[in-house]
Length: 79
Image (cartoon, rainbow, N blue to C red; front, side, top):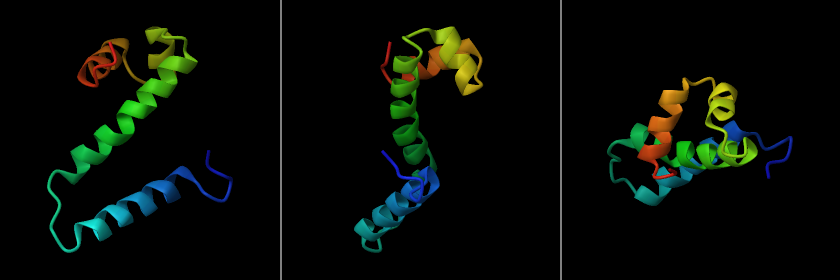
């Protein structure tokens, strides 16, 4: 769990910096898609658990159309 002094943005920033450091000069490919996928799946897992697998409620919380949420759940093999 993050502390008030360690925001989600700070965690992402540090993780991306570490990723670049680990590349050791090698140029990344598809960085945006990789990062969105890495964040999206755990986000969906947690929100669906909190919504007790109620897709309509989860979609509302996420600000997504229910069909869009369902598509993302299928993409991440969460259905």
